[in-house]
Image (cartoon, rainbow, N blue to C red; front, side, top):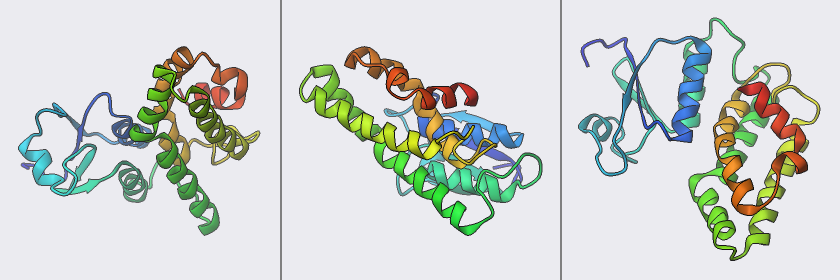
Length: 197
């Protein structure tokens, strides 16, 4: 890379995990070069060099070094660019641990595999009720954690919000194919999502 100080994001427009990195960069006001990968069929030499283990996006390149995995990238951005807006993660160790716990919960319940598995059950109507129950259980726990707060971390947009908000783009599809309403069941989640947008 010509400019060692440059910030580069290797990404795919449809990647919800890439959205996390883009949101964090934009929230911090960081200038960066966005390189769109042609996944899944063609992986650039730069992607293979910068993420030789997983060979997937997103990858943040800063000071010529790669940072991989979306939540790791968001945390890195928060630690490196401290000026400006409120931090994504709380300073108190317990609150910080809780934010990481809920972000991990989102990863475990809303990963592509989990969404595909539950979505397939809904679309094929095989295990449709079980899939709805799985979705509803995850949403119920998240709504309880959100409570009456504006954002998961309180009054400011933060780590858990960045982890979860990209998945909002899929809500409509599951409501349509599964014939249920997330807003009717979990109005606080929908209100939160609208605040985030």
